[in-house]
Image 1 (cartoon, rainbow over the protein chains, first blue to last red):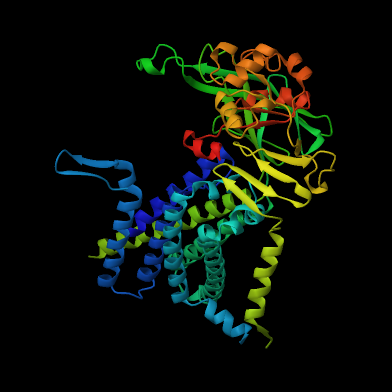
Image 2: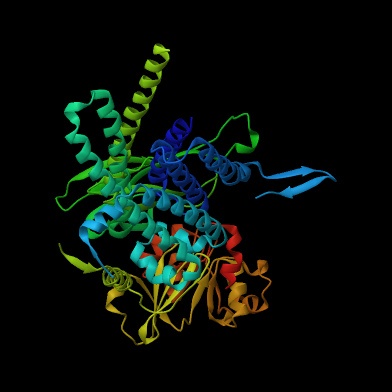
Length: 95
Length: 272
Length: 179
């Protein structure tokens, strides 16, 4: 599953590079969103190396994947949903 | 400390070094993206300056903000060296065992090395782009105006431009806003050869190794009295071809790998 | 088996990179704007859209490595300003008397020095930003034009008048404009 997710992540990165080049003449967009995505790409790349080289068992690897999921949630998902507002109960901008 | 070349080669090709470098790069870039969020302008100038120009201005003058960027360059360099050594060792072993393994297993293992080599190509392409690229932003062109690019013999002119505005749309607030913009550029080189090319948003033109991107335009609302103009970003990027090659080979390697994974899963399911 | 000193190699590469990067002088940046201080009191200024201008003291020759960069002689004595905000900043700096041309009518100004200057004929109204009187501008012959309109750059280049784009892509750059 992670391999497929990583494959789609690579496709997203490549299409992003192409889009940025066509619009702004540079394959890298110099803002923090790009570097979030690249950091997560490297994180999952590290996990795949550990898993496919069979250096770590699945139990340890599961913790790495969980960490990766939290990173994706924090860096990629939370910025898009904005703040969570429940009047009188919870009113916070999580990002 | 004196180290032999052979020991360094063996050390560079270790799998644990790869993993440390990958996670190290991930952590460094995460820290860096948080720092970048607070100091956008220090890094946004990298889109118009080369790496060495940027180092001489923003980079060295703000080391407390830019340290992570230089660390990431170092980590990626070491990762590229590690990948190269690892891949070279792997390919040598694979070619030695070619006759004793099935084609499927050979392609599966070789596709991984293709992905690794293309990763190095992409990194090299990024470095070449930002060290050897020529970037000429902020070129304003009005209708029938011309500008010279790098030499007086190489001229670019705006022959015509067309701005389409939103009309009769269900979203009333959008009426009068720009729908699309395009321009016809005329290029003349030293041999007096004239060519015309159409450019639009996200649709650049290429001529004599330079790419011409539509960065901005005016007017942006219907009925404006402002004189129409376009703003071009002109760039000569020698690293783009390396990056395109890297992405293409990576896609090929990834497709072969995924196909092999699906096929082996299918064969395993058929056996059970 | 050849041996080499690892630390010497690493140190050489770092030193070469620093030298190659060409650290020239002190550098300060304010949002999109920046100033690089060179020798002989010259400066290279980057405006709001990344255009470079070379500030050279009057009577001095420009540094050769900046050939091709738009030159502005300092101290600046006569300016034309498009934006009321820029005029306000010039007043804050105490140089509102350097304004020689504006694109806002007299009745729309709240800065008394500018209204008085327009009444006395020292400050010229150049017309609306969409239809600037370039002949009048040429007569004024300012040292620099502060504008937000990038469309005038080709015309000002023909007239050999330097211009500074004082606006930036993001509105939140107002503190940087002020600095």
